[in-house]
Length: 114
Length: 113
Image (cartoon, rainbow over the protein chains, first blue to last red):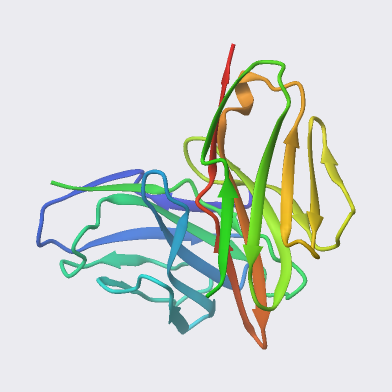
């Protein structure tokens, strides 16, 4: 089955720790995205990557880092510099063709800082 | 600054009612407007609208876009408890090779039995 997987589903972190959220897709999509969602709010873009070995900051990149070494994988690291990391994190992907605008989402990771 | 505004922010109706959700936008380089349904986890894609006045329909859900007045509506008829979700609207913007989705805050819909 084609799709996007994220792991873990739930993650607990102590203050001051870095954590890495996994995102893998087997849809052969070129572009991948990381969003953060807080209660009662829409999706805010953290980072995105349109091709392998390239990525761009979104609207709220501070305190986060990413890598795109493989087409299938786009891990997100939440660093200790992120002041309020407790949130629901969604990974999405999209074919690179301009005519296709919809993004497909993974199931999300809920991160809680203790 | 590009923005997408959804209204109402939340809505509670009874099963069987018809609801209309609104999405207005101010986005440069508009390409399309997308509706998603989000239950507990990942948003799932509902519709993509690119042309004004052409209704997209899927079962009890339908949506239409007005590019002159810069808004879209999502209608759900004969609502069921399974329609309870957050409905997200997003606008795709393209400039050169730069594509982005601008998201609204969502409408939380609760259907009471």
